[in-house]
Image 1 (cartoon, one colour):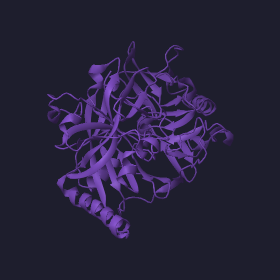
Image 2 (cartoon, rainbow, N blue to C red):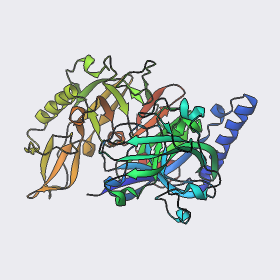
Image 3 (cartoon, rainbow, N blue to C red):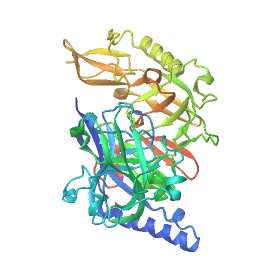
Length: 451
């Protein structure tokens, strides 16, 4: 089974001026205590392009939920001195960025993006375990770092499939376009246990984009970032900075939920919003509001996660949505009745569709109602054709909302499939997420990307 990987290429030359302007205004603000950045609208736009990879090659940081998925957002950039090519999965559900490190003296990493060689980088520097970065800024890591035999800050990442990675926290220079950003903190993982090393070698690592102090976006100091994914060919764009475009419709904002007190099941650095209801065919389902509220342990938060493909709902909400959607489609779709088939372990509502049927019948829309904003899912984003699954002359299509309870996950998670053709703005300064429906392929064209 193969899937698609969304790759952010390096910025085009036309965007380097805005990138330079951003870093100039940041430096000016630091030294002269004058805020120029908000007025000059420094924004760097990176295009999304399609690349085919096996889904097993994408590793999720355990900073957040260990869902498997077939489509991932990746960025291609360079790291180190001299620069080495790397490919990193963009994940708004994770904090620590990390690279698979190869410390061999003879490695030719400059020609490969599968590993990063710190030995070849004169700007690479491991972080001592006595530093405040190791002792204070890692407070939201699932597993707190320790000291290795050289007194360096040693991080351990564990996965739900029993795989793991270990290595030191370090700093090095990361390049966006031709602009170098020194002293970016990341994990240099030189010990990785995996049951599929061949496939895992296709990506170098992961770029954490959540609200933690060591996430990539926090370290860069961007007050906002946005992305927009097309539903047609999975092209799109990533924008770092403000999005003041006259052609962009006004955004509807939903506030981020803050939690000052640590709770066992609440991720304080995730992009958490308040889900208030679910509509099917524009009719609000009779689900009690209490179902969407986190409990006293923090279980039940709603997270927006670019590292997850599909959307997962806690049991009571999922059951209500599943039952209503099943009733709505009873006369137009043939149910796949196999209790032993549960796609990705959480999606148990599937249908049989003749392989010679080129289009699905009209499907009822599903709308997620947030505080102050809504996200409506329609068309092909409602059902997903499972690759490689056929029953006679029928293909298998599954409902793209899954049951979190079947995964043992105590949260609602909004995946990036349902964010297609939606401008998604993450406003860190004002603690909110903005949404607006838009043709993302046309947005890319307006920005000169030719998507």
